[in-house]
Each structure stands twice: as C-alpha cells, then as structure tokens.
Length: 201
Length: 201
Image 1 (cartoon, rainbow over the protein chains, first blue to last red):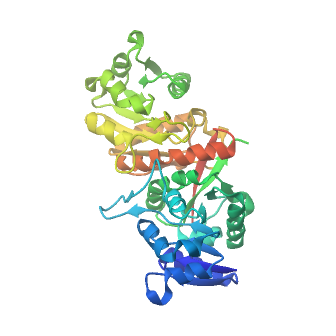
Image 2: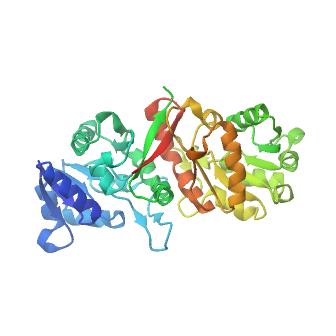
Image 3: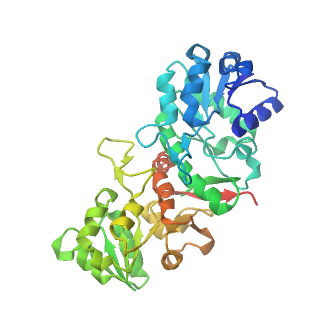
C-alpha cells in the first residue's frame, strides 16, 4: 500500500520503518521542499499525521486538502505545549480535540485518532510491554477505522486489544490522557509503558 | 479512626459503608444542617471530599478551614459539568486541577488526590475487576500519602498496585483521565472497569 507519512520526528521515523518493513511503499513529508508534505500526502492511499500536534493544522494545510480528500488520515499527534516546562499542557482539550480540529479543517479526509496514547516503540512493537494492554481508535467512519485496525494488527496488536471508543469526539479522552501518561512514564521509569483495560467479567 | 465524609452521593455512601465496616467511626456531612459539612469535618481525623466536584470548594468552605487544618483531606471528586449533555466537560483542567484549587484554598489541609479514577464499587472492592489494575495517589506530603495508602490497603488494594504519581499537580492527569474513563465505561458496557499499568520488564 502507498502510505504518506507526515512528520520526521521519532514517531514518524518509527512508523515509517515499521510500515516499510511490512512491505508498504512509504513516502515521508516534512517542511523540507525536497520531501514536501504535499508530495507525501499525494503519494499516500493512507496518510499518517505524525507531526508535532502544535503544528499539525499548519502541516496539513501544506499537505493540501486535495491530497487528503477521501483518504484515511491517521492522527497520531498530541498538541503538547512544553514551552512553560514540565508538565506540558495541551493546546486544545476538554471541549474539543486536535483530531476534531483536523476533521473540521479537512472535512473530506477520513480522520481516525489512534496510537497517540503511547511511545513510538510500543506503537510498532506492542510485545515490548507485557500483558493485554490496549490501543484505542476513534473516528466517525467505521470503514476508515477498519483500515486502521488492519494496520494495527500488522504492527502486532491482537484484534481483541484494539478498542474502538466510538466517534471522533472520543479523541478528547485519548488526548487528555497524555498528562496521566507522562506521570506513568515518570513513575515507571521507562517510556515503554501502557495501560490495559480491565473490566468485570 | 474518626473519619469525616463530605458528600452523600453514591461515592460518599459507598465509602462510608466500607469505612464503617472496617471499624472506623464515620460522620457524614451534607448541606443538610442536621448533618452539616462542618460537623463531619470537625469529627474527622481524616476527611474525605466526596462531594460533586463542581461544588467542592463551596462545600469545603462550609466545612470550615479550621476543621480541615492539619488533617489529611482525601480528594475523590471530579469537576464534571454535564449540563451540556454527553460528554461532560471538566470545569478545571490542563493548567490546574480541582485538587490544587482545594489545596490553595485550604493551605493547612494535607490534600491527597486518590480514587477519582474509578467507580465507587471498584474503589472499595478492587477484586470486582480482575487483574493487576491500579489506584493512583498524588499529593505534596509523603506522610499524608502514606495514611491514604494504608486506607487503600484496608479497602483491598495490594500495596504494589497503589501507584504514587508524585506531587499534587499530578492530579491534573488523574482528573483529565475522566473523559477517557467515560469512554471505557461505554465501550466495556459496565462501570466496573479500570486500568492496569503495564511496563517493559
């Protein structure tokens, strides 16, 4: 599959490496005109937003609405503002989310929030963390979520551990989990930490 | 131990029942002058804030700073505003938390955030949910957190599953987890759901 990877940070590079290893044809986009966001988005049948969440709307604008229209756009980003030190704060939360902002700005993209709740190593190698820990998906279109679930299964996520939280407004909870995740990271002493949802049988 | 329980909702009643069962002398306080917040707080060596988070500062004001001074104040509340329907929003988050607001308003209280991340039945009966799921504590004073840990162990929480997230500003993460918790509740189909933190060995 042709995949456009927006972002060249740790998350973008880790996802690119895994998707390439799985046989996909990945084109990476950045602000560098030599490998532009627009070229990467145009290339992809599926596009990943792995840019810094604070800059995602801008980056997606450079990618171009016409290059995102009709495509699954997997939003992996977190809008964390660390400019005032630890703990960083979210630049959008509570009554809105980055994923919803992206969907509103690019109404023809099929936005699915996923993978933003963990470190990149865990995204692409869930076996790094023991136990039945979970990955979440949220989005307004079931067919788009099904495409993302297939990719997650290829990453090594058993189907039963991919938890559909509903429509895209569930991304608020996924993004607002980040401040807790940062504390779990600190308390655990490793970024290779995740949560397993346990429920009454 | 003498315990003041502020709040007569499901959380307050469930905690009262469990603490009484454990042999503690619990006095419940509400807006009702017959069993006032002030009388309950004055009675307690430890005080629980189990009021609606939107009204907690007001309720604690009625309890009286002099009845909270020097005491461990376990803040179990969530400032969820459901007036605009589902999903409810937090009335404070991101750069502040209810627990920090309470600590600032009552600087002589020893505030510990705990138990707000789960349903009342699970708080007092963790065995209801299978697996090594966690309860979190946050607060600025280690001795106060140690008192709360003891109570949590009496509730049935194994020591290893009581996770100290650090100073009271970690309450931001614990409170901002609520929107995700609400989605997990919906997806699981039961409020008896909690998260287990898994980490790389």
